[in-house]
Figure 1 (cartoon, protein in one colour):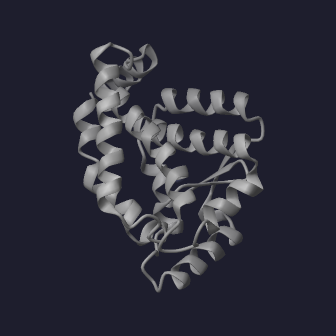
Figure 2: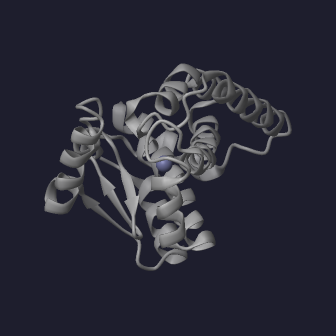
Length: 201
Ligand SMILES: [Zn+2]
């Protein structure tokens, strides 16, 4: 697989966050234990921590089993999201951010800090999606994203679908403005598209 865009972005993240590394959850007993704990905590509703979720923790990106099969562009979109979490940890401190993420005001069912932390990162996901795949791809994430916030994946962190939809619509409106002003498509992304197209023949 050519991974020029995502590899270049990893290198950029390592310059910005020198201890940044990518490791597989399946190689870590601790990550597997966290997965088992979350499955237990959510009554079996969240079972994909190791198999399907990528997680930044203490400067390391722990990737799920799905990482190996991801294409260059999808990895890039994911990395853009995770970079926001690294920047947040630098801004607020790893421990205060972790405490807020896990506990404020509740660990499950009403986790406003977690919802705001994730929203900032998902807004970057949408921005990257627009850059890589266009506005329609970002718009199509509405129901999927709402489900992330109101469902078990993140412990029912913000079970208010209308407020998620409002955040989403505002974010899309901002991105539409950026697209209208030609601010989003970059040379690196176009080059990676060409490389993927060549590879696909
Ligand atoms: Zn996140």
